[in-house]
Length: 82
Image (cartoon, rainbow, N blue to C red; front, side, top):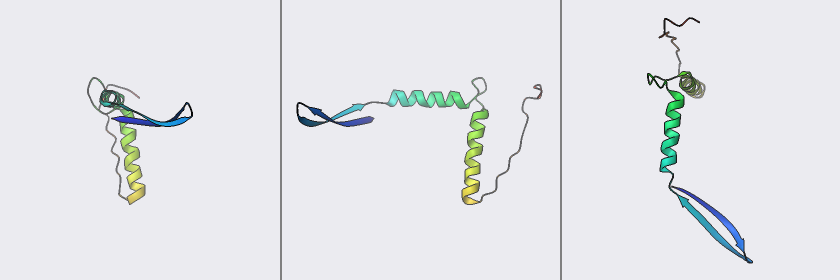
């Protein structure tokens, strides 16, 4: 639920106006969009964007706590040249 509250002046008097909205559908759509943005639609595997988010998080933990980080590159598409 999302609640917005404002102070409104009307005919020389002040009122507090609150609006409450159910946002469960919006949150479900946001979660779906995040899933679509971070995974391959065909395989469901994490995509490059998701990988970089995870890498950024791990590097943040490395800087904060001094924990070691290892990166092992694996080419899972041998037919692609690059």
